[in-house]
Image (tube, rainbow, N blue to C red; front, side):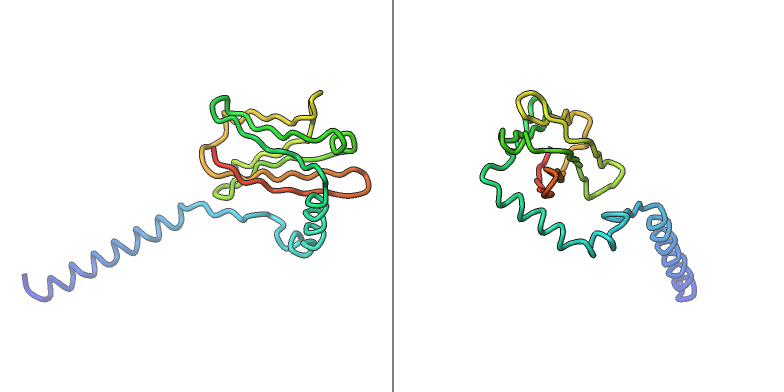
Length: 146
């Protein structure tokens, strides 16, 4: 093979690799951590206040995961549970926003929030818990792996 043919083969290989990388990059899904991240960043001081409010509680909600039954539960102390006016629980998956799940914080008669996670994708999750008692707002994040 002479040097002219080698140059042509090198160009063909170069363009083959280049088009392969372009194809892969065009088919990769990129999602933002949050759609309104700018507004969330501006209100971050409020978020820190919510976190401090949880840390100031004498008794905090307790998180537990049942890996055999595939359930997640949050047990609230009696004093905290009685004061909850409204709340939200978000199961956040950082790798893909389409797997995120958000629901209302509804406690059963034993002051527990329970959620079946058998349909959740296996991997790292973050539970984002937000509630208010009418006067103060509270926020807690819990990392867990299924």
